[in-house]
Image (tube, rainbow, N blue to C red):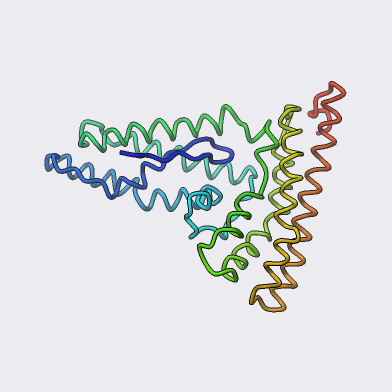
Amino acid sequence: MHTTRLWVPKTGFITLTAMLLSFALHPNSTRAADAATADFNRQFGAAFLDHFWRLYPDAAISVGYYRVARLLVVPDDAARAEQLKFLRSSLARLQKIPAASLDLTARTDQAVLSNELQSDLWQLTDYREWQWNPAEYNVAEPFALLLNTDYAPLDERLRTVLVRLARVPAYYAAAQQSVKNPTREHTQLAIEQNNGALGVFGPELEQQITASGLSAAERAQFKQRIAAARAAINGYLDWLKAQDQILAAGCSPAWIY
């Protein structure tokens, strides 16, 4: 069975094996294994993925799943607590299913998914890249994908972007609160990448808005939210540059908290 792996900010890699589970065929199963496998597919099929995508909408956009595209998760303690709850509860449910009760294919899927969830949990609670790598925080790519992928008419995509834009200031405020003791290399990378992010909210977006069928009120709201998003990115950049100066002097940024 083929799986797809993707980078999920703040938690690491997660498999999309579960997306295939509810469609898998198990022709050689016994009746008992059929029932157990059906329960496994039910628990870790569509409903599991829907919950996952809502926690990680950027990942959903990256693989072309746009049902949750209007969501922009603010990376604060509450969001990480929700991710942690999801990972732990999913692992607990997964571990309650005896591997011996499943057919061979589902047993393999269970093992792969268990390894992935445990890895994600470790990323969140132990590796904690969300804390020391400020380059983890950048809103640009999902916005660029929404604006440049013709998955829907332009007006629909712009309205999705308009909704997401409202949370960009909160996103960068949470990013700044999350980062503690960053490495200098990652701080400089974050400066470079977020400088590039400003371009996503520049003239090309303004041209798309001009060419759209959005109402005057929507255009006015876009103007306000683009300005707020750019201000939030620039604020994060100013903060990152301050961290870089402290690190260049051989001090720990923890001194400024």
